[in-house]
Image 1: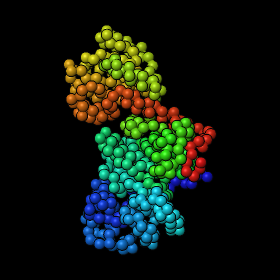
Image 2: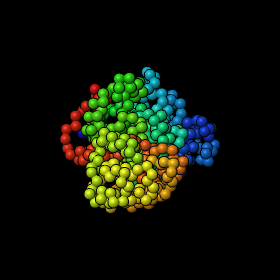
Image 3: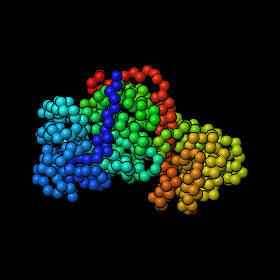
Image 4: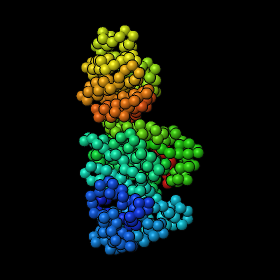
Length: 486
């Protein structure tokens, strides 16, 4: 029987926290935690714990855990490893039941660390504690209703600016990849709201975080980086439940012999081949990607269209070569490029230059300006809304054409479009930042090249199929091996 999901509210939305090892120095772990709490705009009660006492980041500190006036929802521990067990014991004595331990020095640190980890587990079981970590970079949850960050990662993600439930969560068994994901989310304006560094997972593994975040209405999709799974049946049960209502996209590390050895050294994972991982992901309802690049593409795509899209695709381009490449990649991704509806084709034949290609892909020719782009998109919106699930637009900007009016026209039409639209721009783009921003504000995800756009569209089209499969009971063979269940 699968254990019930844990309530992780004290870890993602605590109303009061203690920072054990808090300090003012920005380069210390305790100082970094205090800084990130402030940067996140955390509005709860903060109790810094430092033997020297005094004021830390404007908060009155206490000299010991026992001196905390009333128990807090969460204790964040950032002290040297050999002192952590005593701090956990003192926290339990003070009535604090939830602890986030960031430092390492446990199961990953040889015989001494293994003994320390076993003692931690025993103590937690005796005192009824729930522990996140150790050996992790912390947690971030930027729910607009209650922002929280207990981490020494260098930056916060952008969060979600939209009113709809399209925030992204990233759950990672690598702190370094969590840092990278935050950096790319800020650079690409991805609606990344929650970031979890899992660490040694004494109590809370990837599936525990997935279960809690999967139920949050502010989260539209969950992205995972996984190297090992303790209980694959429980993981599958939780992943299928989440995938039935929102996308779960995963990058599995250690899929090659060399990578498997590296993963074993990092998390204790047992190597799996591609076929085993594919079968496991399918049984979980998970969209599997095989590179960080594609995981970021999935973040871009599902950050805008969390429900996924259908396979029927129209490609609208002003350049033959990029249109061909887009069609190739779309086909390889399993998208369907059906013929143009007759009414749409007739409008285009009457009003486009004779040299234009009236097919799928449409080629408007390189000198297409706002009138030609607008005509083609209007024809698609008016005559093909029932024939296609999405439009992939390609805009190459030659020297003789001013792109700004084209962008303004497309953005204006897209704002009320009945068909989802993705857009890519290629070539030398002097106004790229402004052009991309205008389109993004109109709800159109922007891509640097046509193949990335088609890959993102392919990922979107995979979700409805997997979602439907999670709602049909069927065999779920245990093909993925993990540390405890070879």
